[in-house]
Image (spheres, rainbow, N blue to C red):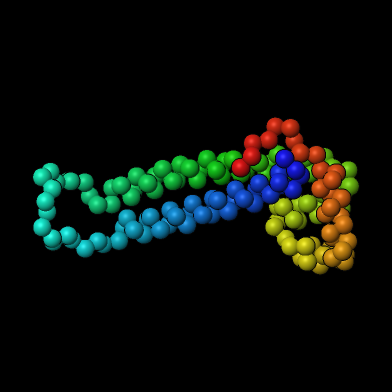
Length: 141
Protein backbone atom coordinates (compact mmCIF):
# COMPACT_ATOMS: atom_id res chain seq x y z
CA UNK A 1 0.00 0.00 0.00
CA UNK A 2 1.37 3.39 -0.97
CA UNK A 3 1.52 6.35 1.41
CA UNK A 4 -1.22 8.14 -0.51
CA UNK A 5 -3.52 5.09 -0.47
CA UNK A 6 -2.97 4.69 3.26
CA UNK A 7 -3.66 8.36 3.99
CA UNK A 8 -6.81 8.39 1.80
CA UNK A 9 -8.38 5.57 3.84
CA UNK A 10 -9.80 7.95 6.44
CA UNK A 11 -11.44 10.09 3.77
CA UNK A 12 -12.92 7.02 2.07
CA UNK A 13 -14.21 5.58 5.35
CA UNK A 14 -15.71 8.94 6.29
CA UNK A 15 -17.51 9.07 2.93
CA UNK A 16 -18.81 5.54 3.49
CA UNK A 17 -20.12 6.49 6.95
CA UNK A 18 -21.86 9.55 5.51
CA UNK A 19 -23.45 7.38 2.83
CA UNK A 20 -24.75 4.99 5.50
CA UNK A 21 -26.11 7.92 7.54
CA UNK A 22 -27.98 9.18 4.47
CA UNK A 23 -29.39 5.69 3.87
CA UNK A 24 -30.45 5.49 7.53
CA UNK A 25 -32.27 8.83 7.28
CA UNK A 26 -34.10 7.63 4.18
CA UNK A 27 -35.10 4.39 5.91
CA UNK A 28 -36.32 6.33 8.96
CA UNK A 29 -38.41 8.57 6.78
CA UNK A 30 -39.86 5.54 5.01
CA UNK A 31 -40.54 3.67 8.29
CA UNK A 32 -42.42 6.52 9.87
CA UNK A 33 -44.36 7.72 6.85
CA UNK A 34 -47.99 6.76 6.46
CA UNK A 35 -48.51 4.14 3.81
CA UNK A 36 -51.71 3.72 1.87
CA UNK A 37 -53.72 0.59 2.59
CA UNK A 38 -53.81 -2.15 0.01
CA UNK A 39 -57.51 -2.50 -0.81
CA UNK A 40 -57.00 -4.91 -3.68
CA UNK A 41 -58.07 -8.53 -3.62
CA UNK A 42 -55.71 -10.81 -1.67
CA UNK A 43 -54.87 -14.22 -3.04
CA UNK A 44 -52.50 -15.16 -0.25
CA UNK A 45 -53.86 -17.77 2.19
CA UNK A 46 -51.93 -16.69 5.27
CA UNK A 47 -51.96 -13.06 6.25
CA UNK A 48 -48.83 -11.26 7.41
CA UNK A 49 -49.64 -9.76 10.81
CA UNK A 50 -46.40 -7.72 11.15
CA UNK A 51 -46.66 -3.97 10.88
CA UNK A 52 -45.43 -2.78 7.47
CA UNK A 53 -42.55 -0.81 9.01
CA UNK A 54 -41.11 -3.72 11.06
CA UNK A 55 -38.60 -4.86 8.43
CA UNK A 56 -37.50 -1.29 7.84
CA UNK A 57 -36.85 -0.75 11.55
CA UNK A 58 -34.79 -3.97 11.61
CA UNK A 59 -32.74 -2.64 8.67
CA UNK A 60 -32.22 0.64 10.52
CA UNK A 61 -30.99 -1.20 13.60
CA UNK A 62 -28.51 -3.27 11.58
CA UNK A 63 -27.32 -0.15 9.78
CA UNK A 64 -26.82 1.69 13.08
CA UNK A 65 -24.63 -1.17 14.33
CA UNK A 66 -22.59 -1.04 11.14
CA UNK A 67 -22.18 2.75 11.38
CA UNK A 68 -20.99 2.43 14.98
CA UNK A 69 -18.37 -0.16 14.01
CA UNK A 70 -17.18 2.00 11.11
CA UNK A 71 -16.92 5.10 13.31
CA UNK A 72 -14.85 3.12 15.82
CA UNK A 73 -12.61 1.97 12.98
CA UNK A 74 -12.29 5.55 11.69
CA UNK A 75 -11.26 6.86 15.11
CA UNK A 76 -8.62 4.11 15.46
CA UNK A 77 -7.37 4.70 11.92
CA UNK A 78 -7.05 8.46 12.43
CA UNK A 79 -5.13 7.94 15.67
CA UNK A 80 -2.77 5.54 13.90
CA UNK A 81 -2.34 7.95 10.97
CA UNK A 82 -1.69 10.90 13.26
CA UNK A 83 0.93 8.94 15.15
CA UNK A 84 2.67 8.02 11.88
CA UNK A 85 2.58 11.64 10.70
CA UNK A 86 3.97 12.87 14.02
CA UNK A 87 6.93 10.50 13.58
CA UNK A 88 8.02 12.38 10.45
CA UNK A 89 11.09 14.60 10.79
CA UNK A 90 10.10 17.57 8.62
CA UNK A 91 7.59 19.86 10.34
CA UNK A 92 6.38 21.38 7.05
CA UNK A 93 5.64 17.94 5.63
CA UNK A 94 3.77 16.97 8.82
CA UNK A 95 1.68 20.13 8.65
CA UNK A 96 0.89 19.67 4.97
CA UNK A 97 -0.22 16.05 5.47
CA UNK A 98 -2.45 17.08 8.38
CA UNK A 99 -4.11 19.81 6.32
CA UNK A 100 -4.51 17.55 3.30
CA UNK A 101 -5.64 14.29 4.91
CA UNK A 102 -7.20 15.34 8.22
CA UNK A 103 -8.76 18.70 7.36
CA UNK A 104 -9.44 17.67 3.74
CA UNK A 105 -7.99 20.94 2.41
CA UNK A 106 -7.33 21.37 -1.29
CA UNK A 107 -3.82 22.18 -2.48
CA UNK A 108 -4.99 25.73 -3.21
CA UNK A 109 -6.28 26.13 0.35
CA UNK A 110 -3.02 24.77 1.77
CA UNK A 111 -1.09 27.22 -0.42
CA UNK A 112 -3.13 30.08 1.00
CA UNK A 113 -2.91 28.89 4.62
CA UNK A 114 0.85 28.33 4.54
CA UNK A 115 1.53 31.40 2.35
CA UNK A 116 3.53 29.40 -0.18
CA UNK A 117 3.14 28.94 -3.91
CA UNK A 118 1.04 26.15 -5.33
CA UNK A 119 4.08 24.57 -6.97
CA UNK A 120 5.81 24.53 -3.57
CA UNK A 121 2.77 22.79 -2.09
CA UNK A 122 2.94 20.11 -4.81
CA UNK A 123 6.68 19.66 -4.28
CA UNK A 124 6.28 19.48 -0.51
CA UNK A 125 3.39 17.02 -0.82
CA UNK A 126 5.43 14.77 -3.09
CA UNK A 127 8.36 14.85 -0.65
CA UNK A 128 6.03 14.20 2.29
CA UNK A 129 4.56 11.12 0.61
CA UNK A 130 8.07 9.80 -0.10
CA UNK A 131 9.15 10.35 3.50
CA UNK A 132 5.97 9.03 5.09
CA UNK A 133 6.32 5.54 6.53
CA UNK A 134 3.15 3.47 6.32
CA UNK A 135 2.63 1.58 9.60
CA UNK A 136 3.16 -2.15 9.21
CA UNK A 137 -0.16 -3.10 10.86
CA UNK A 138 -2.58 -1.78 8.26
CA UNK A 139 -6.25 -2.74 7.87
CA UNK A 140 -7.35 -1.39 4.52
CA UNK A 141 -10.79 0.15 4.21
